Image (cartoon, rainbow, N blue to C red):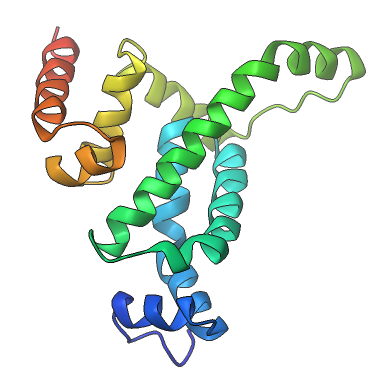
Length: 175
């Protein structure tokens, strides 16, 4: 890793916000797996996670100066990643039907690799019955191991709502 690898996030964020490229690079290297992993859990696709992670890394360059330290950097970054994945899903839904039909007609449709297929089936089997709000909450709390307060901040809802959603998700999944 780079020369700044041992520095705390707060120091790197301040330096990156001031234009230090090495600090931004250290933050991206340190947190890329978190970004990519969350995107993968939210979409179920490695290819989509790659796209979202790239989008988040580019957005981070523009947004790093807006980090005010009101939450942990990782919570703030999780929020950016969550929003990028949500926006990606919205865009995908808008064009999915047309795009899929055109890809098949043109012979461009790709078959997912074995790991994507297995992970997607596993993910769908566990959370497919959950409404998106419940699924997103479960991914943040169980998958990303955020506290209820941190998940509430990312989702823009009350902490009590996160607790209720987790309770509801457990109840539904235990059936």
